[in-house]
Image (cartoon, rainbow, N blue to C red; front, side, top):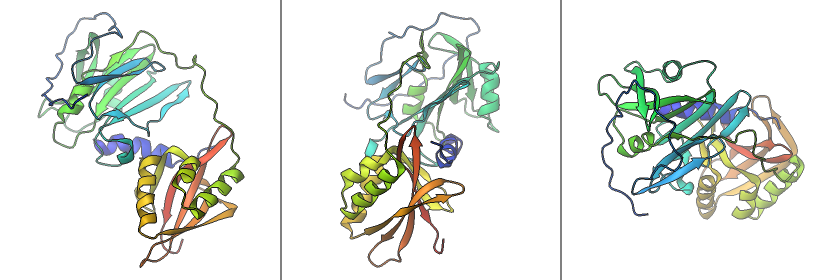
Length: 321
């Protein structure tokens, strides 16, 4: 289950881009199946003690999070608006420790075009499990469906239909029930309105690819972590090629880089020419030299958000490539 959730993000992130005190966990009972339709839940519903409400007004939903849990920096957000494809992740670690890979502990919310599917059918098609059943369920006064492990009765996902969209929430599961995750799943509420496509989006400050390459070279030459941070997207893909990359907040990547610098690592940056990989797009080649180890080629993949270029991935090449 964890691998299924994480794979969705890693596949997308590796693709080329064009342009209060901690609560004591309590067991969460599986919400009961209720056949009758009930009113839309109010966005002012009471937040339980020890939880903090996260509201996504753009997509029109909320979840309540235990202490430490937060909206992940590596959440994709709205990918497309027509058809709608959007997702958020929630993790129980600080930003400096945010690493999303197979086995990561997280809660995943998806909001997508329903394409005429009922919540139950959507779950059947998108969250298949060999040991699962899919059934009608009511959660927070909204009728939808849930996915349940047949052997244990553990509900690991819920889905609801509203506005022509499917709202689905899923927790990572590796055979052991997670009470904090279950507590989050039980708080999903679909709100009365969503602003996706209506609210103005911030326009990134333009930055050319050449200017970015120069800033990368200058930042690494000076071992200036703040300057390097300014070149990076908030979330970056990191890993060996070939291999299984993960996603990290740039803060998490920079924490590891700071440790490398402290251990004596130096980095040479070849800012020109800006190279092109047929699968991953434009990149700047670097060489990491660590005391007592062979030099390592590391490619900093460059991606554009409108007219602003940033480092979107850090790919470690196999020897000889």
